[in-house]
Image 1: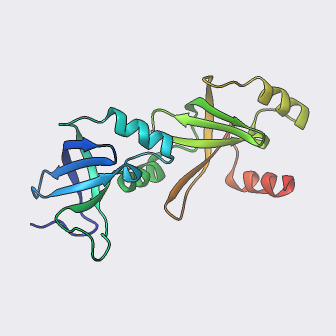
Image 2: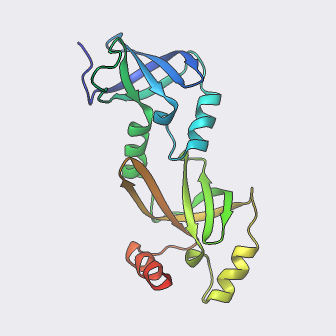
Length: 185
């Protein structure tokens, strides 16, 4: 059997380079390359950390993706990210709290890393706990890098090739989130 575009299967990391990993597909025996941009994670920092920790002999789940015309076709072009994004889209709960680590703070919100899922999301200032802006501002000012907090996934969607996750400190509907963001604009 020869792996075609869309084939998903397990593979073993043969070796890694500064730009990605070489993977041998278990079922077909074919070899492919996963560029760092195609490792799992929805931002460059997470994918760089993935590359730093992945080792020869690790098992990965990958999908064969289309290659570009005229490029070296000795190896398959593989994506771990595509498979992982699909799993997050299908299985991340939107009605249960998720542990998050504060990974960045911006004027409009807080970037959170969700270690159980290997992805990051944005906790917008409007989605912090509090009945009014003053309460939400106090909550925002009390959050610092490295804090562990509980959040809820409000919206999980693909925008082009990017998995985006909107978070809130309390359960809220996607419709309520959209309305709040429209009112703040």
